Image 1 (spheres, rainbow, N blue to C red):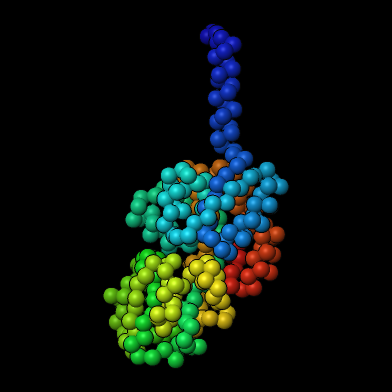
Image 2 (cartoon, helix red, strand yellow):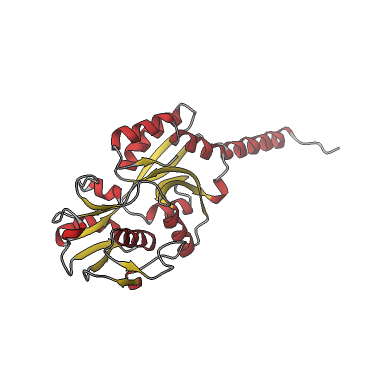
Length: 266
């Protein structure tokens, strides 16, 4: 029978304790977008604390850094994106990231400071859309829904992202201007209208109810997600994070605070 020294036994016990600690973290970093997500996570943070999970909220002002930071290990989770965007990022960058829970749906809107309806848009109007594949696709589908354009059959749905090159009918000869999502609110004064993501719209003082001429359906494939590294998806802290977000307290906050501009997806 093999005999272990006291020092070796203590070392082994310490390793075992560290392994358990790594499996069940008590403090995590979660990346979110500035604005609504940040507000909501302040409530999530309070709920999670009652379950022994301390959340440090890290805010981002764009859509590329949160996945990069998560994949690199600088975050434990993020909560800012929908499945089509995550899929496009994984395909483009090879990230090993996995969704672990649903959060909210933030309906996309076409905003305008000059017109009150899509019918008022003039011939040749300039329309800003996002230049990333998933949100650009989303914008084109919304324009199609309102009869402003028609896309080639088979694009825009089922994982095949549409681009302006896929527009086959454009009765008003709209000029589709592709810009970074964060730039669209700042460019709205120079455009007839622009597709703007909810968090950027709110930060710019725009209202989904007041300032849009076209709005996405409230529930659909663009529900936002809590995402972790694939290796962490079944960790106890990940389950606690999802449980805290999907609590009645957080649901009530979303419905009361945002009054339909954000919709719980859980």
